[in-house]
Structure formats: C-alpha cells, structure tokens
Image (cartoon, rainbow, N blue to C red; front, side, top):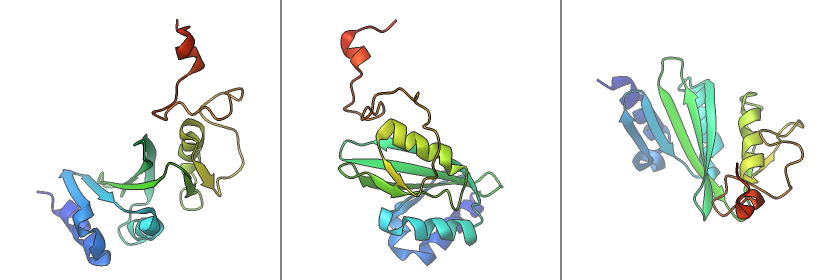
Length: 157
C-alpha cells in the first residue's frame, strides 16, 4: 500500500544509517525525518538529487522553549511529502539560507527572521516579511515568551 514511501525511507536509511530510527511514515504520502543541523544540508541535497524532492512547499518554525525547530516540507511531484525537521539553539538562533537551492525559501526565511528572531546567513537583501516596517525591533511574536505591549495594555479591539 505504501510501497513508494517505504522505498524512500529505505533509501534514506541506506545512505544515512544513523537516521534509521529517525524516519517515520505517518500515513500515505507523508514521510517525516528528524535530522540534526550538522547533517541537514547533506540530507537535503540527497533528498533533492537522489530522491527527486525538488519542490519546497514551506518552512515552518516552532518555539520549543529550549530550541527552535524548523520543518522543511518537500514534494517530489507525485504528492509524496518529505518533512525534514531540524533544530537550532534558542540562545544563538542561526541557520544558513537555502535560497541558493530553493529561491522560494526567501519568504519563509524572512518569516523566521521577523517572527522568531532567527538569523539567516546568506538571506538575500530585501524587505521584511510579514511584519510591518515600523514593528518594534527585538519583538518576535511567535516566541512563546513574547508578550505584546498591546496585550499587556489590553487594548485589543
């Protein structure tokens, strides 16, 4: 029933044996992989070149209080999604841009900068997104410890 997903899982396990326990097929067309940042680029390149996951659908961020997790969702054109999750330090949140590989990563990486305060090395110059230009510096609304001055003053309409 899920032969294609199991085949992809096996190819990843064969190439990266240390990830064997970090790959799950949650349901048809959905593969999840946890990889540390040290191996992220190598695994991403393998997914693109050897497994044909050539479409970046999205990058989602999550504040887990002690770290930030990032989920890179890739599609191979057949509807199978490979979700590669990695984490970075919350104390020094820095990651390398993947815009040289996927130009459309630009908007998702800008979201990481604006909403979480993550530094993205190599992100091309451009306008901020999605927050307005006059948004206060150092205010990252998707961090779990963030409190808006508006919320504090209870001025919500």
